[in-house]
Length: 127
Image (cartoon, rainbow, N blue to C red):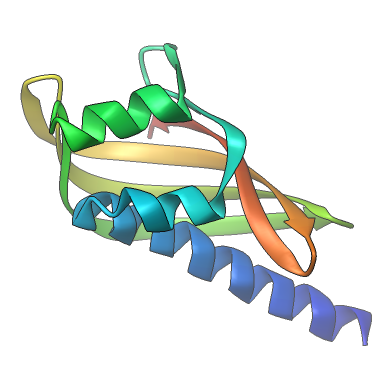
């Protein structure tokens, strides 16, 4: 039974993390807000830590514009109600004026609340 629950959790985590990337492309901030913690932070590849409100403002103004992505690799580690997702994508995005296909690795920390996974923070690096 334990293994089945872990597999279900992994599938839910993969679904929500992929959904976040799709919502970034769609610029659907309302839906993003539902899956991100109220204190969510995004750490950029530069090391800059950005609040959810500031990030949403950047997406809204299109200073950060996401076009498409190709998933390269994913891994999920679960410890009770906490999880770490590591995803590598080729992300087509324009960030602060520079458009590129970024080799982006996102390390997301999640917490299970009321049977739903919530993304607490995401740290971006390159791979």
